Amino acid sequence: MVDIILVIPPSPDHRKIARFSFQSFESKGSYLFQPREYLAITSCLKPGDGAVFIDGTCDNLEDEDFFCQLQETDKGDILFFSLSNVCWDSDYDYFRKTVKLFPDMPVYVSGDIFLDMDFREKILSDCDGVVFLPYELNLEKMAAFRKTDVESLPGVSTKSEQNVFSDPRKITKVLEGSPRHELFLKPGYRFPFARHKEFATVVTAYGCPNACSYCGSSNFPPAVRSHEAVLREMEHLADLGIKELFLYDLTFGFYKKESIPLLEEMKRRFGFSWTCFTNHQVCTPEFLELMYEAGCHTIMVGVDSTRVETLKNYKRSFRKDKLESLIEKANRLKMSVCADFIIGLEDETEDDIRSTINYALKLPIDFASFNVIVPTPGTLIRENLKKKGVSSADLTNFDSLGHAGNIGNKHLSGQRIIELRNDAVKKFYLRPSLILRRLRKTSSWKHFTIQFREMLSLFAKSFIRTKNI
Image 1 (cartoon, rainbow, N blue to C red):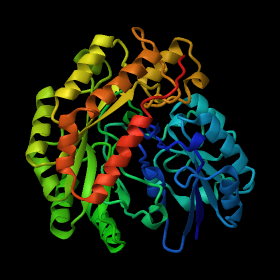
Image 2: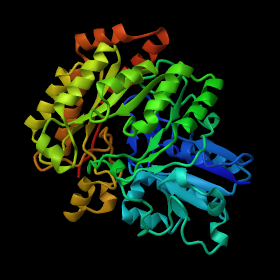
Image 3: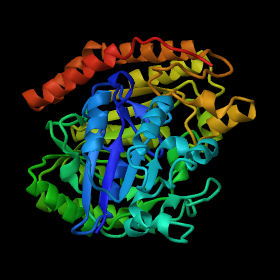
């Protein structure tokens, strides 16, 4: 038997910061995603194994309450701690104080910042390993790591130069196992597109099949779960009374050998309401219709920029005709669409950014997520800045909202990029036509209150003090 302790520290000023290994971010509204990697870790538990979960961010814990909960955790064989590039200074301080409470317990960390070798080397002097592939873990070996001569662990980097990733384009199969969702059904987790307040996160495939070099997820090889395993997980969620799902694949539908039979069974057996990320290159109109029939009401798609030359430089594949065809089909099905945009990519001028914003205003979509450029660990953007002499330490605490400022590009200051992003938010969301469109698509009073809360928080966060480098 193995007992694990999963820890997420409080965030500075109670900000809604989601910590992931591929890219962490601050919520642009009042939502907070469930911890995808911790869900995967609990799927590695065996019957009889135990788990305790403490989330200082979700539960808005003050320091005293956070450390009190830790001290009340009287048993455990492994401690997992999640950190972020977005609030590294704060997270690392909590981490150092936490490990002092458990001096004899093996400690493993996760977080996007450890895609940067400088920080991976730093943290490995304080812990036993960095988790990158949480669905591969052997918890028994991890618990005994300090007492054995084992030098490597599945899915874990135990040395700074160690590469745990396989061929980034090779698809692997994930071993069977279901997360312990009961641990993560906290009221502090909120999903912005949900039609029901309580939701659960389901992952059918880890990693990403795309190679976009401005995104940290391109480092993670695709790993696919069988549709049978996912359906068993959904049966459990239905028994728990869950009606809303977030299918948190980075590109849902890229491996149709599993996703098509999954959707067919979801359509036949369940009545879930759900949302997912997908891509216009893999989600055909026919596939989207099957998603809709299986309960999908909202899709999130990446547009990023209208400057095709810039996207090509980052290995981003973009076809405007396919994107618009997908959005048109979604509108015919009365589905909602959220499009993601990046403001301030390298080489982009203000005119380029305004072109992207105008395209967002032109598209018949329901939501737009405008993200300022970020030197995310594991991306070409960060590596280029380091080659220019910027230290890794000076590239922490930034995120796509711009709360802590922005790096800027060769044409625009960080301050100007944030101003353009905030201007885009106002232009997009204050249109009477969009407000009317959203009211028409509101399915219930509860749905309306969720949407209204997110809108208020979005505007509150679009007027923030910033810093630049």
